[in-house]
Amino acid sequence: MKGQARGEFSSRLGFILAATGSAVGLGNIWGFPTNTAENGGAAFLLVYLILAFCLAYPALMAELIIGRHCRANIVSALGGLPSGKIGRNLGVAAGLVGVFTASAILGFYSLVAGWMVAQLAAQGATLAGADGLADWLDRQSLARDMGCALIFTVFTITLVGEGVKEGIERWSSRLMPLLLLLLLALITYVMSQPGAALGLKVYLLPDISRVLDGELIISALGQAFFSLSLGVGTMLIYGSYIPREENLPTLGAAVTLIDMGVAFLAGLLILPALFVAQQGGVEIYQNGELIAGPTLILQVLPTLFDTMGTAGIIFALAFFALLTIAALTSSISMLEVPTSLLVESTVLERRSASWLAGGVIFMLTVALVIWFDPLFALVVTATTEYSEPLLGIVLCLFAGWVISRNKLLEELRHGNPDIEHSYFWKIWPPYMRFFCPLLIAAAFIQSLR
Image (cartoon, rainbow, N blue to C red):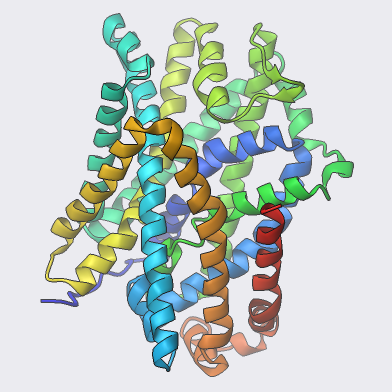
C-alpha cells in the first residue's frame, strides 16, 4: 500500500551525525580546499564563513522547517503547502526538479566517488604487493570507472534500503566519527612536515583586497550551498524525520557549525600538503595559480605520497579512505530524495525503491563514463550552478511566504515553547521573506555574467 510508515531519527545526535554526514562530503574534503586554492586562500575562507551563516544557515532552516512541518517527501511537501491549484502544481513541479537535481548530482558524484574507491583500492593492492592490480586501478579506463562507481552505488543503495534508523542514522553515526579521526590524524602528520607552515600562511592570512571580488563571492556562495546539501531537498527530507520535540534552530546551527568546521579542517590538510609537496619537488603552480580540482587530488597529492616510501602508501590509504567515507555519507542523503518519493507514492517497499532509484541513477553514471567530455561538465554546471540556487530560492519563498507566520511559530514551538521571544524568531522570518531569496538571486544573476 502507498504511504508506508515513515522513519524517524532516534536521537538528536543521530540526526546531527546524519545531517552533517550529508553536508560533509567531497564538497568539503575536496571542493572547499580546491576552491580556496583557486580563489586567494584565506580571502575565500573569510567570505565562505560569512556566507555560510548569512545565507546557507537561513536556507538550511527553511528546508528543515518545511520538512518537519509536512513530514513528507519533497514533492508531496511542496505540492501540499499552497492552497490554490496553480500553487500546488508549481509546488509539485519544484519538488520534481529537486528529485531530478539530487539524482543528477548523485549520477556524477558516484563517478567521482568511484575514482576515490579506485585510488583506495590501488593503495591497498600496493600494500599487499599486487602491483599489477594497483597499476590497473591507478589508470583511468571505462572498465575501472564503471566497476568502481558500481561498487560505490551498491554500497549507497544497500545503506539507504535499510531505512532511516537502521541505515542512514546507524551508518552515519559510525562513519562520521571515523572520518573526523582520519582527518585529524592526517592533519597532525602533514603539519609535522617541511613546507607546511607556508601553506598555513596562505590559508589563514587573507588578502583583504580580494574579499570583494565578484567571482570569489559567487564561488564561496556555491561552496556554502553545495557543501550543506542545500537546494536539492536532502535537508528537507532529513527534516521530515526529526522528532517534534527537537529544537530546530539549535539543530540547524549545530549542523552548519560542524560542516564549516570540517571544511576548515580539510583546508588545514590540503593547503599545507600542497606546500609539503612543493618542498619535495612537486610543481604546485600552474599559470601562476595554485593547482586545484581533480589535478590536485588525483595527481599532485599522490605524487607527494610517492616521495614518502612505505609511509606514503599508508598515508594515501588513509587519505582516500577519508574521501570515500565523505562521499558515502553524502550519497546516502541524495539517494534518499528519490527513494522517499517512491516509498510514499507507490506500492514499493524501501529496499525495492532504493534499488530502483539507485539503478536508474547508475544508468546516468554509465552515460557520464562513456560520454565524459560532452556530458560531465554540462551535468555538473546545470545542477550545482543553476538548479541548486534556483530551488534554494523557491524553498526560501515557500518558508517565508507560503507557510503562514502562525504555522511557522507553531512548528518551532514544538522544540522551544519560548521561541517567539528569541532573536531567531525576530530575525529569521523577515530575513527569509526578503533578504535571503534576493541575495541568492543577486548572486545567481551575477554568476551568469
